[in-house]
Image (cartoon, rainbow, N blue to C red; front, side, top):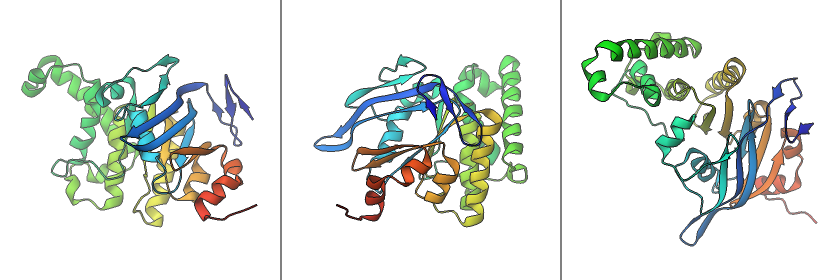
Length: 272
């Protein structure tokens, strides 16, 4: 199914491109605790790549390595065919990597529109003083960014809450606003940390639809951590499975679903 150089074709006929990011022999230690142990996998252009595993498997730590929040103790991160040096998260964001968080990280006192506008900060060229005075090129630039934010608001169907303070919104809509803010950064790789956590069935269905629409409309490469296996199997093109910091599975959903090591890790079933 897969061409290890050029990409692969999904069962539904979508063409996935070549390697966009490669994690090579990643090990992450915190003192004597090994959070990730010698894990390698790649992320290909245009795919939805899931990272799954039991609690404590190291999934969020891996996402933090990808986003630049953690620098691996050993191993290398390659992006667009080049080794990525140690960088701060804002520098990684400027490369085109945006994320949402397991615990919602929005500004409750600000409106939905203003929260989403913060996702454009890495793309703004005007200085802080010019932005504060809102004149000349700074005003024109902000208007341009607002137009793009309004398109995202329309895309995610949150027009009716655009001026509402985020703190007044129900949980499911806050998750959607956080997705909108990440999309506002025009990411090459979108990282979603448990986007369905705490949602009811209807909210999950909406979020699944939007993740698929983002991939289809913008071709955005997406990496997600998710505990709902039904969601993972329906959304993902390929799945990495972690357990106690190790990689125990990697491949298409059907292959991973039938992997005995994965079954044991989730169900605790011993076998001969």
